[in-house]
Length: 386
Image (cartoon, rainbow, N blue to C red):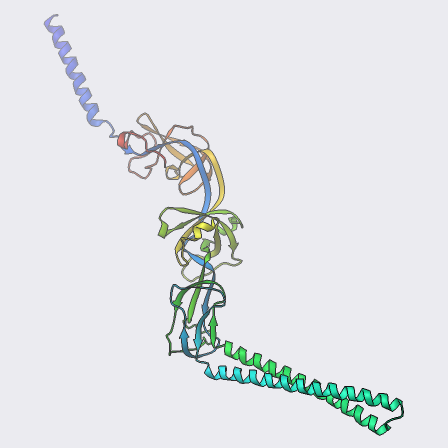
């Protein structure tokens, strides 16, 4: 090799090295992205409550005696299980107890007097029949017959009056028993005592109209629970009775409870400074789920409007405005328009425009992520869809 050829070769190598260095220094820096493979799975269209819902008991009574008075006995404590008609509280009622006893005694006396009067009337009736028979035989006078007959009728009237008086006395007993019952507070249904207010010796009064006062006993039936969830008025028309729902409770983490829509309020709730909402009542499908729950838990209800199984789907976070996505294709980002179907906050159904296994970028809000940009996968592998 001649000296001139060697110089040309070295010069070519130097120019190539300089060009390579210039390209390396000016090449675009690839952006790190997260990507997920397009896969088949479940997609649901759902609506959820706008504010926290509440677990409520089907039956809950804030009980108080129908009249005021001094507490003589408080027979239950917070947390007690009670049966229907069980006595919970008694006001001082010794005077009414005495009145009931007096009324019963008077009723017994009235019954005895009625019995006596009716026995006398029966004797008078038989005597009148005997005298009438003798009168037919011309053995007694007309005057004697009329006198005995009139006496029998009078005795019969006295019997009727005595029986009516006995019924009045019996009704008076019922009246005094009703007055006595107003001093007794009984459980209207079986349940658990959630709270008691007042102690023995204190006075309780019923609530005046429009002025709520604490109940003497707060009774809850935890055997039947449901969730009240406020749904935004925009979403409410899409909800129908018996639609399936998922119930999430803060107390149980991410565990969902199956339920269904049992009631839709017939009006829109307008609360100042809050969005207008419609209350939905969601019942639990499995009665065994209720056994571990308590009334008052905060809850979220996700109502399932539509369900599509085994369809192509992408994470909703990968969707750009105008139904566009960015694909990761051998180090480059390529924009593609797609046709979508059912969607929710987590997944969107793909009807057309993508195939299974293609990688869609989910970190679309990062700087430099755009059509035609050079990219690398963060972590070296696409993120697996949950």
